[in-house]
Length: 300
Image 1 (cartoon, rainbow, N blue to C red):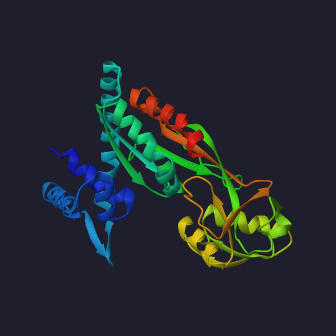
Image 2: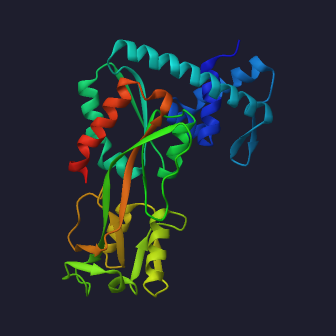
Image 3: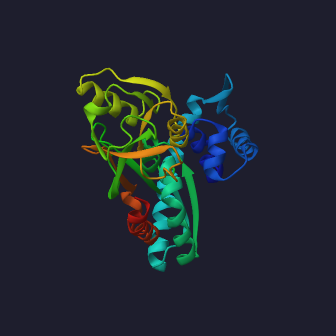
């Protein structure tokens, strides 16, 4: 009989793309995940992973087992939901996924409250990009996700996934203190169209939004510094190297030498909580979503 824990390890490698990432998501060491899959290969007398460069790829046989694992995980989830619903209180493991600024700016206080008020709840947090988390929820890799979208990139709504709005995260323009615009309280897009920008790399929603917006203002944007971390963007602004568009959530303290200016109309990204329909009856999902929404005003 196939071992469910080993199937979950294989499924995690499929979902996260590597043994290391799967180990992080499961709370194991990479060697433990490798051992689980090696045992599964011996059980099935089948090669499941093949080396490809520095990583691994799943064989056709492994893909069949991943599909089986997903079906079994649905059945197990149904049983867990029924048991938790019968108890009438949050319990069991609850795995959350959140994009980096939500993980740093919103989740610490939420998780602390859940840990204090729901001692039977075993909490796990996985930091992932927002565009990946929807699929992780849909496939049962995580129980609950905090994701976001922008007006140019609505959040996908796959079948079987429910969502609830948490709040709107406003973005501001950050400029060096000595910048010609530093004394302004509000800006319009034409004011900043010709500036040198510090922004996220191409392919991110923030980058795409900025490029589209500045082009609509009649200028081809100068994306001089392209870095993924907002903290690094703020540091580059403080060094006088350019200006940046930075969300308020998870931004942290603004250093000396940086001014925060409002851009009209203000760019906004909307945050959502997402979960599977099959898990909607879990008291832990209900209390976690309520806690996210309750903590949002303080994080915004």
